[in-house]
Image (cartoon, rainbow, N blue to C red; front, side):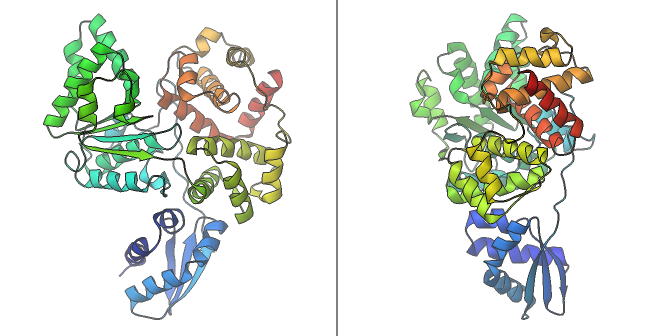
Length: 448
């Protein structure tokens, strides 16, 4: 038996005996590097993960001994994780680059965010039931839980979980027609099709899918014609055995202005809620985000951050972005408790730009810095300098003023929130290695 297969069998045993949050955060990213003379060396992506896994040494040893029928000694070591491929700006604001081979083409057409996969999803008490249901859908789409309605507050991971299902469906069947879209996009395209007398093309575009993933369905409430058309789209797909997945900030029966027939259909499958993350899950998210950004946190810093960021996943992500910028500006990649405390209790120690700014003023400053017209900055021209300016502007509107994704999209020419997320993630990723970009960010802040 090769090492990969052996370790897969070991981790399957561990998955049964360990809590899901522990398994997803600490065990799932490990790898068996060497097994010789009953000495096992296990690679971990960070010192903190290695430290935590040592607490579960007895479980690891029991599972490995069971698989090898031997008495083994185990050692956990640091092994740098493989960095994901960087994405390139090509879409309306920012879209990932895909290869021409399948299933990449299916992903390109789906509208799915490349990072919203199960591999990047932290599972804990707040989303464990929803995650289990999602796994059931992946195994039997259109039958197990249809429709699947996910609801919860802002930033708890509804979109991530929903899109992760889409990724898995395409992975399992590259020919699957999966389409992700915000409910608002459905309404806007409906109006556009009526004006252009292309309603039949509109219906085909939405009804000829194997799975639709509809974000923020509450936004069709009170819009009679949009609800009418979505009702028929829902029925067409559901009766054909196609999977429908919806998200909202509240459960169907609490959405004011939503027609009773839609409420009935939305609740006809499985309705689950996702709560804000608890301390353990916040810790796991912080570790994951730190790894993605190339910084290391000791256990005390992780605990301190988890205690002080007690809201939702999105706030954790935002704070980790700010912490990363602060650390990189001081040439630090290892964060300890003192650094974390200083970050929270003092203004950013070297980047004195975290003060409230008027959104329109920020957009104007960015346009002036790049020597372009404001109209071009928020327009649709795809020149390289304009794309960079838009990315930075979107990033600053999110991190500097803490505007919601939807509002940033509105300010930047009516772009949807997934495009804004793409822009934010692009800048965040580049800041870790691009000193020119970091300097541009500082220059812009000095002008605010």
